[in-house]
Amino acid sequence: MIDRAQSIKAGSAELLYAYIDVEPVTFNRGFYTVDVRYFYRITADAFVGAARPVQVCGLAAFSKRVVLFGSESGSKSFTSENNESQVQCVPQSNLPTAVVEAVDPLILSLKLVDVCECRPCDCGCVDIPMAVAACFGDELVTGGDQHRLFITLGQFSIIRLERDTQLLIPVYDYCIPTKDCSCDNDNCEQDPCDMFRCVQFPVDEFFPPNTITTTSSAGGGCCQR
Image (cartoon, rainbow, N blue to C red; front, side, top):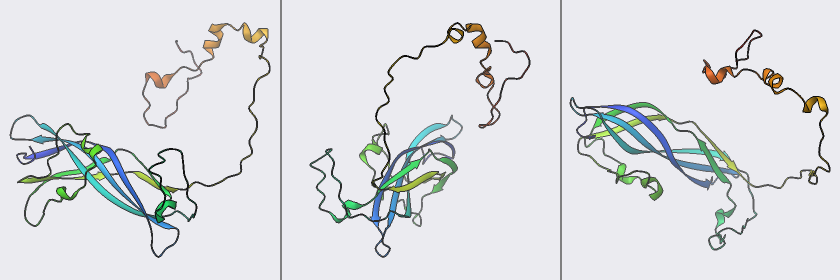
């Protein structure tokens, strides 16, 4: 469909997975390179002739590298989970943990590009994890004869390094109630209708706000419930 398409219309973009690799910087102690490779599922509408558009689904990948400070530690941590796989005999056992928080990207641009010798396809060079490939119903096609589909995405993400540390925090014993709290007669015998009249009318539940941060309150006049 991509080879036969005359034009393309953007659909949606979904972030499937982010592969993370952490390596120490050789000549800068305490700093580490974090290589992140994002994998996206892209849907678009391909227009072939005068017929109705056909939805196509494909995979896009993007790599990003950042350098962050993660301090140094000579300790090695062992847990009871996966004992057989935690043989820490490698020098990188004290690396910090990289965490990537991301949302689904925005599609900024989408275009069809003709295939030529000056623009070879590098789709076959992408190592696709099995879990990512399983997100697609059919087998991914990594080559075409006429067209390539290029997409520009806007990705918001937060990349940080984490390391376990020891902190001294004051704690107290469990607070267990010794007796039931009894209410006085005024609170126990309050009229349910009077209590309901004190509840603010949920205007936003019936009328969507104009902006995300809009807060509305009931007016001082009469309102029907």
